[in-house]
Image (tube, rainbow, N blue to C red; front, side):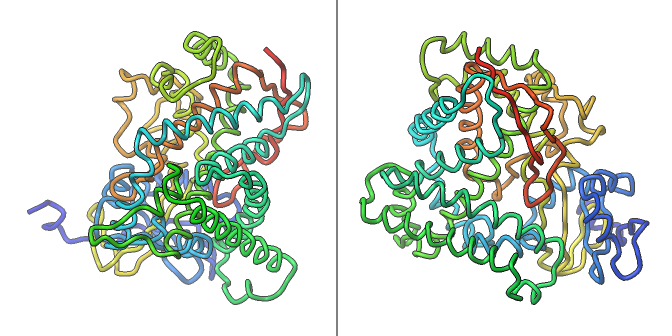
Length: 448
């Protein structure tokens, strides 16, 4: 019998400072990153009030690990309720047997040998991006990386001639959709979002076009056949234990999930990484020297990644200090306990990987960009669950190795060709939405 099952569970402490009626909602809207970063000072598990509703914030990495691995909590809460408008009932938002079935059927698409095939697409798109720039040109690195990431995931989904035009449509629609989704997550005033205001009409139009282009991609994939070896072909060919394929709606929802994760998260991480390297020229110099020593006169391949430890460390440290996805929610299935505290049934639980990955209790010099902290002899000192940009357990992102390969290949392709230097009009403050992005990251391309 565990100690926790013997000791009566108590109610988690309520964080002070809430306002009448709205509770901590104003703190969350005004400075969400600072608000979550300060919560651990109140306890490892605390209560916050969002209007009339109480939510539970988990601030300790070990408790977050327990939360994510326990069957007592499912994907749900404000974040996922909002994202379901976009993602449907795909592998990211489903639970239980449905999730396990979908995950098993998707996993073959992300086998190591498949990622090696996709790596060529990643390198080609990175090289095409770098070729568009001229010496001394100012580059909006956020927009450039978004376009590159959308093209990579689109071509990996379906390699057909028309995918370039579809990728541009996806990129345009996603920008509008993500802005609207964050407002809907923070301000849960559902009926008002059906009022035909200009902003609501723009959101609904972008969402409809995104779903339409996904349907076009799937239709093209079915017409091309199922033996192409791309992500979509793998999904169309997949069968569950009873021999049943994914339904048309499941395929649609999976494709949307892949596009969203493969565009928004990758683009944000790359933009922040180039910004961090511009601020830390010694780390950039080491990365370029490493890449040139491995592949001085040829393109980077998937097989090269094992020989680029500093490049991989740069990516990992950028994801730590500037994570793209920064907040997650869960919902309790029934009354339960966590960390000795009582959690009622149907409670919303929230945790912030941004706050955890910048916690001085887990990371020495926590605000310092230090890729060497991920060398094996130092990485072993990082507490378990303090760094998990792709989640953990059976909810871990199935495309984690795909994403890591893409980040490293794009970085290793672009950085040896261009030094990207900050310019006066850069605004590196954080733009907060469903993901975290720089407000306006403009860099000057200087050839090496």
